[in-house]
Length: 422
Image (tube, rainbow, N blue to C red; front, top):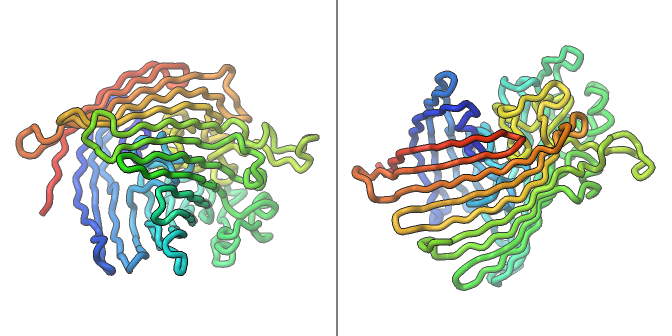
């Protein structure tokens, strides 16, 4: 299920047909456009037909303007083998958004290319399936990279997300602030006006999440390696690094030759149990309080940082589609310690990826599990290329879960893939 853009349900049987078309931007052109569309017909406990992707994008020199729902990942994690970015991993369905961004590192003038930047801002829609109907997404990020033509690059990124606006199904809350002045408060993470719910007047207007990303990449002749670190914060205590023990740390090694038995290796460590302390009440250590960050949960936006019941961030924080919570903690497991290892390569006509994740799961501070639940998860993905008639590729994926968190499960996925141009 994990990091499949919400395509697979937790039910024992899934079958689907996904068909679509996509064009690609021409990197040599200063002005260009592209578009894409995917339609999914999926049968699990019932038959669902939905638009998975539908987008159009305009390229103006180094700036892109796009509208629609598009498969995306954010963060400096390894794109191929990661367990998933801490705050936006590709675990949930693509969300409809309007975006203006600089998607690729672009040289800052007068720095001879040794200082580069990228970034963007988006406005998105969660839709009507949330507890707060018609919730909006505010998203922005900015990244700086140093190094230019040197083989060593250092980069830093700041990512900010917020759920805001909408109308709560709780009559005591009702319609939430959604004017331009309110957007300014969301943009700068300020407190709401007197018309806002009391907690949003005292704290911040909307449900805010953020991450600082740090990384170092080294480019050698035949391979590339690097390290990365992603922090997480949902309030002032997190921004002040009080929860510095929490985050995602990774190291990767990739060969530039993809036709070798082992072309990439990744190791990650994920930790989310600190949460700036177990309680938001004042303590002798922190007289102003501010603990129990309760990642991905929010008392106003009760479905938290999810879309169609899947966590938008790391799948190691358990999606409600797998473990349903209640109005207090919609996400029932956000205290996790995990080790993740992955490797990829090619054996003649077979491309493969192997993932292994071992996690310890503690529940939440408010509703901890009676005992720690451990879990081992293994997945082997393989694709047989260019050996079947009619240009078909055969995909075979095997998955195994063993432990107390998700139980003992085995799964197999067989897929036929046909790609072409027209």
